[in-house]
Length: 72
Image 1 (cartoon, rainbow, N blue to C red):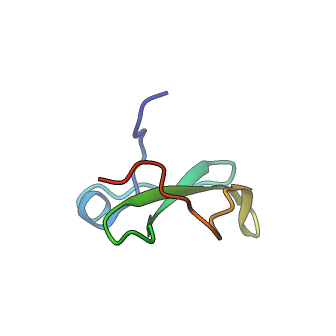
Image 2 (cartoon, one colour; image 1 turned 60 degrees about the horizontal axis):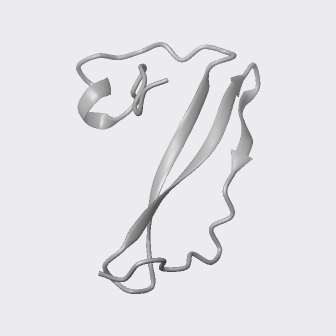
């Protein structure tokens, strides 16, 4: 596995290289959450699988409280 695997679904990539999303595909939906120090941030992934009825979340990291481990 690579850091970023194909297909990559994002505005800069997908407009020129559209990919068909099929049932059974698994995606990591990545969100950037800022930390309370106003400088740091973390990227939180929610793992989703495409089903016949839409998408189902299969793994979600709890992000209600994100501690700052190393201030810069």
